[in-house]
Figure 1 (spheres, rainbow, N blue to C red):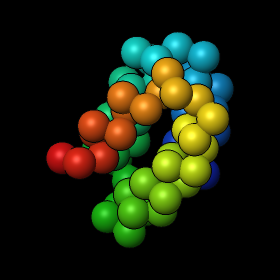
Figure 2 (cartoon, rainbow, N blue to C red):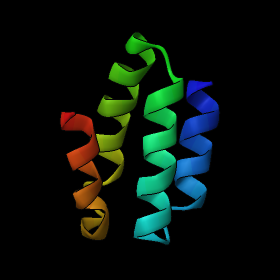
Figure 3 (tube, helix red, strand yellow):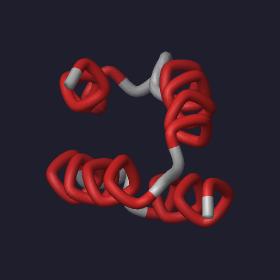
Figure 4 (cartoon, one colour):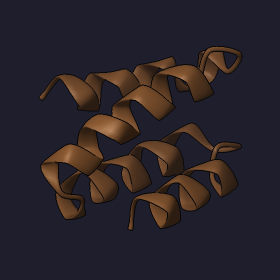
Length: 61
């Protein structure tokens, strides 16, 4: 499920609102250890995408 979530997030990364929506869905469906892996992946994935930095808000909650 983690790999599927990453694939979906990559595909919707052109749209910030859609990216945030899909990220919220992923955070609700993944297991706690998968959420931690997703956080690490997300932080590295968005380093060159400043428009997606607002999605980090969802990782704090």
